Structure formats: structure tokens, C-alpha cells
Image (cartoon, rainbow, N blue to C red):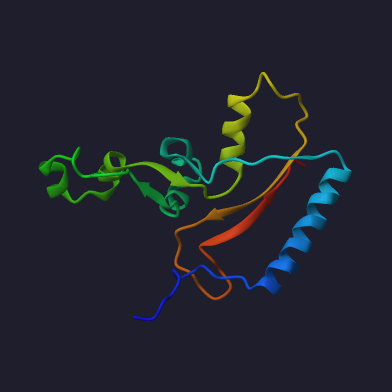
Length: 149
């Protein structure tokens, strides 16, 4: 069997990475020149934090992460026999990969509201994941940048 990567993802050569890093460094230095500071949030969030924030279509595009270990041990035979993936998801998954940087940033602000001063000048450049069918020029994993306007 020939090695491969998941559809909608890609490898970057060392030459590509040098170009990407140059662009990212240029963008970061521009943000910092205007007083913005870097912020990084985890790649995954608790599932309830993300669900319902992007609408029904957006919720379908969130990569859910299976609970560690025997994730089906807590699921009853009745639940399994119903074959209702929406109900089953809450029993077998508590986390998901972030879909964008907006909801994680909002969660961060709520958690740290007493520690930050407003306006909070931050920028983020981090990967995000979307579980849609990859088409030409669209990826499941890509970098997203965000800063307040």
C-alpha cells in the first residue's frame, strides 16, 4: 500500500515553508508595528462551545473528536440501535477541532475578561479545520488569520 495523506490536506516542502514563513513573519511584524499582540488558542474546543455558533450547516462541518479509550462503553445498546448520529455524538465526543478563530476568541475573552483591557488588540494566525468535501483549491486544513477591526 502506497503512503498517502487525507483528502483536503497537503505537505509543504522546505522551499514552500521558507516562503510561507516569510509571509507569516511579514504579516506578524505589520500587526505588531500597530500595537497588536499575538494570541493563540487551542486547536480543539469543548464541543458545546462550538456547536450552534455556526448555524446548522456550519455544525455539520465541524470535525468532532472521539473520546479516548473505549468511547462506546458508556453508550447503551438502545442508543446504538437507533442509529441516530446526532444523539450518539454527544455520548462519544466531547471535543472538536476549531472551525474558525471567532468562537475560540470569544471563549477566551469571557474566560479572561477581568485580566484584559479593552480595546484588546490581538492577532491570531493559526490552522483551522472544516469537514467539508474538498474540491479543487479548497482544503480541510488551512491557516486563518483574525484581528479585530
